[in-house]
Amino acid sequence: MALFVVVSVFYMVTLMGNLTIILLSHLDPQLHTPMYFFLTQLSILDLCFTTSCIPQMLVNLWGPDKTISYLGCAMQLYIFLGLGAAECVLLLVMAFDRYVAVCRPLHYAVIVHPKLCHRLAFLVWVSGVFGTLVQSPSTMKLPFCSHHRVDDFVCEVPALIRLACGDTHVNELQISVIGAVFLMGPLLLILVSYGQITWAVLAIQSQEGRSKAFRTCSSHLAVVFLFYCSVTAVYIRPRSQFSEKAGKFLTLFYTVVTPTLNPLIYTLRNKDVKGALKRLFGKDTKTGVE
Image (cartoon, rainbow, N blue to C red):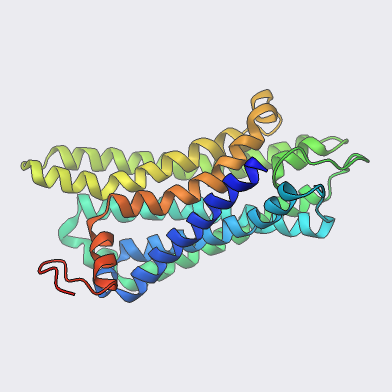
């Protein structure tokens, strides 16, 4: 019951925080920029990601019934894995946006134009579909043991692989390859882009310019760190001793905690979002007149 209350609170904060970002980005003309377009996509992903698993999790935590139907488990797996893969690619796209903003500011409007933003958003969602269609069908075809007890909070690939009674080497290899493509590949490119950003920031002469560039990127870097560290530990080696012991608690972290922290990180450290909130509620940020 204690865990039910904690997860419920985090889920409500996730819903309110991400819906607020989506609403602000849509209503405030000053937020009609590529950065907030991609931030809106992240909020939509987080809303769908958490909603695909937390309601069922709350049902299981609330009462004595700890079951999920086979169809429900399969649907949760397909949606959960697809949205997770899409978020990995989206974080890479957001890193590209920050790279252009800091390293090539004079060409930013020409490079990151609206048509490119929509193409990149389409690529993000298509990559999610591709990722889940590669991994999910083979996972659901595994020969599961008779007791069918999933040792996890959600139906995800590592937990289902550990549930299987037959040979899972092909599935483990498959998830490692998918993990390399959707986790390690984007993470490496993100680190390279931030290496370039660091050099560009150090070249800025004024302290104010450095601080502004740092604020531009620090929120995204914090989100990358929270998401990738927990997901990588579970998915790269699904049958490792660490994954078996700590896997479900890391799952709880990146399904419940991280989507809650994302909007808080972007709003608490962001003057544009704070200003948009004031404008939305009818308060002029300069005069303070209602």
